[in-house]
Image (cartoon, rainbow, N blue to C red; front, side, top):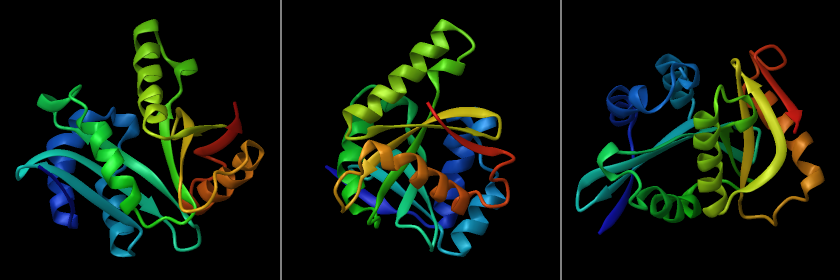
Length: 191
């Protein structure tokens, strides 16, 4: 039996220390103080997935008061359960519960900037995971803090946007959530 729990800041801080630091490359790590600052202004939320009371997976979302979209910031499964379908089950159960009218954006490292074939295949696999679980390609990428990401989109409570609408929408959303570094360390571009 699986259960989704909304996490407190202190719950998520423990997950950040215990899992995220090992699950994500340093270049993809948002500093804890930035997460905490967003949390304090109600711009960040995190959820845990529990199987019979045992922690199985986590997801966190970044939001803005002025946008109907949210960003899937982190998604991870505890190491012993990876490859078991828990990540897909968690997304399937969680996404309808996220308070987003416009939809959810997700960032996946771009295969085109991988350093070798093995890394390229891992990145393709991550993108395929999101696509299998309801995301659509936006045709937009973003260089963010030196990492190239493909931007994917999970439709929210509105009809799926036309492909031509994504670039302006992504630019506006990213300008809002990455305001201090937009244009300098955050540069959306068409694929």
